[in-house]
Length: 453
Ligand SMILES: Nc1nc2c(ncn2[C@@H]2O[C@H](COP(=O)(O)OP(=O)(O)OP(=O)(O)O)[C@@H](O)[C@H]2O)c(=O)[nH]1
Ligand SMILES: [K+]
Ligand SMILES: [Mg+2]
Image (cartoon, rainbow, N blue to C red):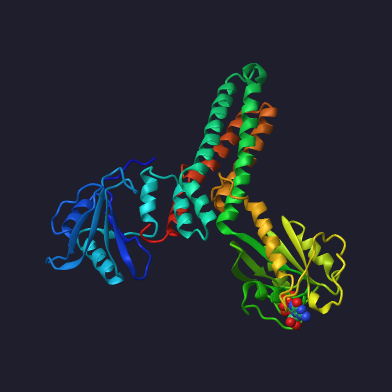
């Protein structure tokens, strides 16, 4: 991990959210933070970790505002550097003047996420923990916030690090055995080696499953609405979202492009994507729409399959093929308002729900079904759940593939191949905590943070 950099510049930003508030905070970090803070407080030295009530003054001593100054000495601060926080009245004009005064005194405006980036570079947080800071700030409900806290506290990182350490040990053992290639592996502790690798494979599989749940906790569920033309897909999107975003007409093939809406149903964040109806068509635009629909299904947690309740078999073949790979499929028999008797459940559509996008009938049952799915998927908050990101899941999957390769290589007594796969698996895990993350990935991650964080 990088050592602390005393040659770094000192950065400044407003740390509180835009808009007026009772209190607003300006944060400084870097070697000149204490000196700049002192100058702003009219030359009064800032005590460490104690509140100082002070007047904040400009260059000619005129008061900008009065408030509280707090100083943290490196390395015992959020960034690991000298940090000063100025709490003033939460006026944008006041906070901006304080920032400008800090800049005149030698600080530089911080880039988005730069405080967290410095915390990462100074070893205060690993990358997954820094990402958890951003996830905590963005958490939409208490459960997501608790899960982000757990990731921030290192719950996720510790499990990654434990597996990484195990892989390193197995690799060292395998590399040592390469020098004795004439001897059978079993006389060189091959059995123990395989057992350790098997245990690491199991631990990684468990972590991957938890990270996939954590990804859903963070991102919500991704539901794609599909079905034959005119079944009422766009009408259903509008009914669930409570607006009229999607164009609805009685012309088959109305929807061409993907249309996305984020809705919150019983506390569950759901991304809904409306798609073009699936059918044989020579129309170029419509075909491109269907291609996009199929593509989108590749990212779906749930397919909401909308069928016309009066003829649920119509167009089924295209739809069944398109949703075959989606983890969860929910069959909706729409336009149930046009039926005189409840529809008989069609074959192969266990648990099909009659609904009506027009009258709203059955939508409560659909909400309940989605909620149950969410709880089954993301897990009840029984403890241990942590937030994770798609990039973490991806890295864990790559690590798992490398471990499989290492296992095969060990079985074939190809020790050099096994060692190579173990190294690649170890590197994939290192991307999660940032140990082996390339600079452009780091830059990308921190640039998505807000300024002042
Ligand atoms: N009676 C009744 N009509 C509905 C219902 N849902 C949709 N419709 C009607 O069915 C027609 C098609 O609705 P859309 O929502 O455009 O259907 P779609 O599946 O998005 O159609 P495409 O985008 O063309 O594939 C419209 O005339 C709607 O008013 C419903 O629940 N009941
Ligand atoms: K239509
Ligand atoms: Mg439509």
